[in-house]
Length: 402
Image 1 (cartoon, rainbow, N blue to C red):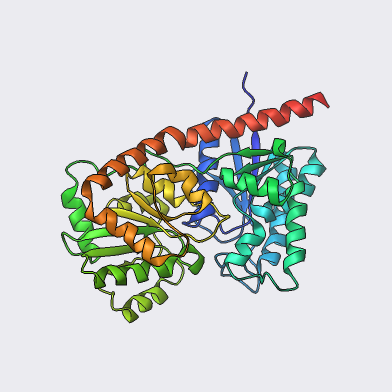
Image 2: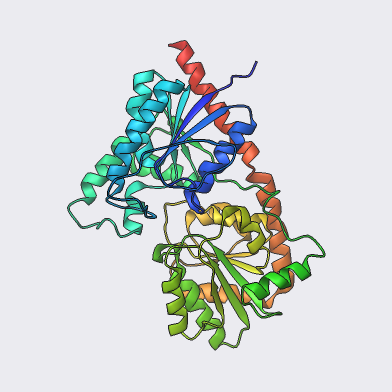
């Protein structure tokens, strides 16, 4: 008889928001529920509710009702609130396992797991200090970098098992933080290929209508991006690439979907004279992402961070979108030999890659079909969910022997 687990997930973020790590938390919780397990998520006060998920939220901070994306000094207070809320939930639920997302989640979950005598599983989505450097919240030459790095090493030693969102993340843990390999279990980001799929035949009228709503002229090729907007995400490169293509006489339109600061990037587009070639939508609900991605001809993943995951690429793959990406280990891990790559930060090479695909329809179709097959074969959430349960089973078996 299969074991049914009561899982307490710790999400030190404003779950649910329509980006990155939230999608992994959401999809893991949904697949674990579908596989017959109970999942309770403890998270910050603010966030979008999700039907059919049990979510326990902290009380709001009296002096800070709004929540920022990324690193913030206010997160210390958020996490103190989260720790007390998680402890109350754990004592009430008596879970079988604590599944902690992000480093703050692992730090909060460790004493609770020890108190209850249950395993702590850490869902590692990238280096803590690496992300703080990406967000320019931490100076590598400043006085706080070494203490932050030491704290990260300490946190990485707390869980009995660490799930990594990529094989590259596994290498980071082994080589930079000296985590024993037997404690690391790669569970790559995945994608729902039934939700994210190419537009059905006969949908051309719907796509034309959507393009019109987005201000994209009929017949113009669409270069598409969906994700957070930030310098380390390569967002400025998208605007600059649009300018290069316009100057070269290429009739392409950039549909850039995401937040925060889309108004600032709209001003950048105006300054470069490409406001007629760029549409910035702001936030797109995750449930509508596939609908909007369906208008794309070429997708772009210009992320510069070497440590974070890049789950948006899996959405592109499932949609059958040929993808141009900066050549980082994580992005190459997903795309394999089917990506069109540019050296990280090389704007000219990125634009050249986009132009190559825009000029070659047959290659776009071939790459798109192959990428969708790769997504279906290797990046199924069903497969990931069963992998997570097998890890729980291993931990349970070890406990039984002691």
